[in-house]
Image 1: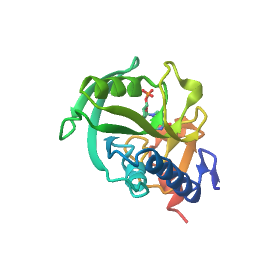
Image 2: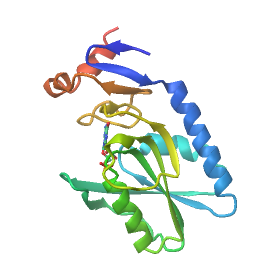
Image 3: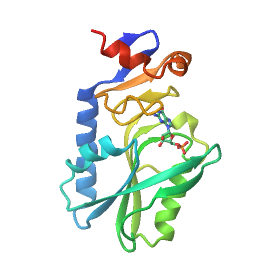
Length: 189
Ligand code: 5GP
């Protein structure tokens, strides 16, 4: 683990990898007799989804959904819709982080309303303490605290999605002043 005054590495690449393998095995066991359709929520979930689907043995398909979020309260709009209907499909929503749970709640209802045969969720991170609405997560990677996380798909103002491990922001003001503060540090040595 590495430490800087403004950010700390909290989950290593090795730990991420082995947890994603476990999630893939759990999904493989549960979907032996039905093919899942992974609905990947852009953009933060893309790295997780790419590793997850490679660890699922069942035949599967992948589609992408882009969302617009409107402030607090979980109001979302569709920025980019799925390429095909989900009617009679066994949908697995792939999310990076579940925070308040409002986005996931809307998404699950959307999939059910569109006629999915079943809906479940694979979320890499769960900020349980910040939940404002009850929503099931069938495949959960890590329970995490309240800190803002970056890396492995998660961004701060578009930066850091390419980091191989997960970092917690310790000094948010430093990131507001300079969104690339961590990047500069990591690449200075
Ligand atoms: P919710 O509707 O559950 O409050 O929103 C979840 C979304 O908030 C995630 O999909 C993600 O886009 C964003 N989010 C929540 N916490 C974090 C975090 O720690 N880091 C990043 N990069 N995004 C977060």
